[in-house]
Each structure stands twice: as structure tokens, then as C-alpha cells.
Amino acid sequence: MSKSSEPLTEIPVVEISGEERESFRRGIGPVSENPYEAFESFLTQVRRAEKALPERVRDALEALRSGKAPGALLVRNLPITPDLPPTPERSFSALPDLTAVGTEAVLASAVNVLGEPFSYLEWDSGHLVHNKYPIRAHRDLQFGSNAVEFLLHTETPFRDVSPDYLALLCLRGDPTGQAKTRVSDITRVVDSLDDDALAVLSRPLYAFETDNPLVIVDGRGLTEPQPIISHRDGTRVIEYVGDLVAVEEEAARVLDDLGRRVLAIATDVALSQGDLLVLDNSRVVHGRNAIVPSYDGTDRWLQRMLVTTRLLGGEPRTDGRLVSDRRYANYPNDYQQALRQPAAQ
Image 1 (cartoon, rainbow, N blue to C red):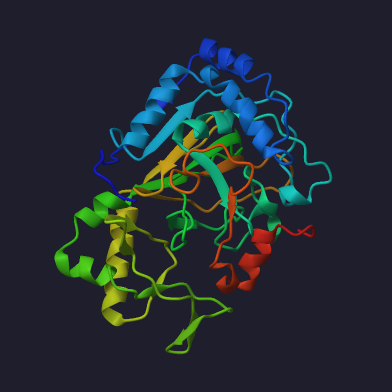
Image 2 (image 1 turned 90 degrees about the vertical axis):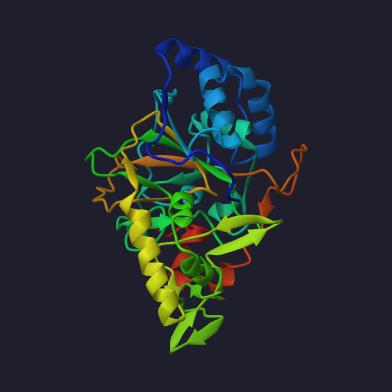
């Protein structure tokens, strides 16, 4: 949800020292539970070690959360396990041995400052930690494991529950140096639009093309049209994806203008090993340029977690972190297959 906050003109950076990194590594050393098998036990261990997170990182995360800082934060020099395995060539849930990589506690320690981890039943085999890297079968999809340009987007828009924040930890940087994560302050763009454009964006005129349509408009199969600007509990909500289409001519003109403006102020950052990028999903959109993966174990590897401040109420839970993605049935078939992470990739 949008809120009064600092505009993003450049991504703030916190680079921790070698001493801070090693202290953090020692502090989370006792975290031994496997988050892919016993997430609640894993999170309990992370929270017991919460003081290990460098204070400067905690302060920066709290500033982002409060809106006193821009809606993106880059933390550098975080500890990554020295025995990181090769980047997998197939979906993580299809691997024969789903052991923790050794970096999940680093990611979860930061997420713990922002809110409660959650995800969707239909995604990533129900894991709360998502491993993202190029997969050959996904190369042409609008999906995090693709190779084509990953268009700017709000994470999981138009859902009953969308992330308030997301965190991306770089386990291995792109060896070619090509991959750039792109971030743009969509709140700043929307605030610059005139009343006529805002009125159009507030009407349910925007959808995705799909082979599992809910409606047919001018011969195109579409998901249910939605507004880009809406209100939830009296607060403005902005949701945007670069491959939305409009169902009316004027709506298409406004959408094209919005897309150009969002791209024009985007900031690109090359994530290196040990970098953590944290995004306020209500204020910024993100994506990535096109890349040329090698699929040989050396490709860029990120871990992602989604965060909510509304779903769980801040109370300890043993269930309820997975919610159903009610839009799933209308996704294109190839996108559904990618989300399920089938064994054959």
C-alpha cells in the first residue's frame, strides 16, 4: 500500500565491514534447521539469533519499513557459504536432496525485521525460500528464471494478499556481468500524472493475455480486468506489470505513457555475491534486463522471500504462511507449469 515516503532517486547502500560480516556469520551459526522441511523451527532459530544482524543493517531496514527512506535498499558484503554448490540446472524442488544451501538464515534475518514470511500454495512447491536462477525451459517466459528481459512489475499484483516487501539475496553473481536488476519508483511516477490519467488508471481496464481466459475482449483471451490504481482500507494501492494490456483505446494510451515514465526513471544494479536487495512492493517495481545464461553451474543465483505485515498479525504461527493464489487458474499453461516446478526441466 502506498504511503508518504522518501522518493527513490538512487538506491541507498549499506556495506558492512569484514568484522561485522564475520560476527553475523558466527551469530547465525547455531541455525541448523532445514527451511525446506521445517520452516517454523528454522524461523524460531533465526529469531533467537536476531541480535546477530548488524545494527546498521537493522536501522536501514527499519527506515525503509517506516517510509523514512526510499523504497529500495542494497546491503553489501553479507556472508555467503564458502562451499556454495554449483547453480542448479533444474528447479530447486526437483533436486534429489533438498538440503539448506547455508545462506537461508542470512536472508531470513533481514526479513524478520520487516514482517512475516509467507508465500503461495501453488508456488515453488510451497517453500518459503525461493531459489531463482536461469532454467533453460523457462528462458522465454515472463518468469524469474528466464533469460529474456524480465519486465518491470509489482510482485504478485491483483491478489487478495500481495507482498508488502520482498528480499533478494545474491548467492552467485552473473559471471558475464550482464545481469542488472532494475528498480523504479512507480509511486513517484503516479504522483506526477494528471487527474484524467489517474481516473483512467483507477478503472478496471487492465488484464493479462492468457490461454486460460476469464473473459474474451476483441477476440483476446484475458484475465479479469483490474484497475492499476485502487484503494484498500482507505489507502491507495498501485499495481503494475510491464505486459499488461488495456481493454479500451484510451486506457492503452495511458498505460503506454505510464510504462515509458516508469522505465525512464529506473535504476539498474548488478548484484554481486553477498548483496541483499530489499524492495517495498507498494512503492517500487522491479525487473531485470535480458541475459545469456550458460546453464553450466556458474549462472547467477538468488534466494527470495516474500513478506507480509497484514496476513499473520505478527503472531507466532505453525500454519497459515501459505495462501492460495486465486489467480492461478487463469495463468497461461506454460506459466502454471513453471510455478509448479516440475521435475522435468
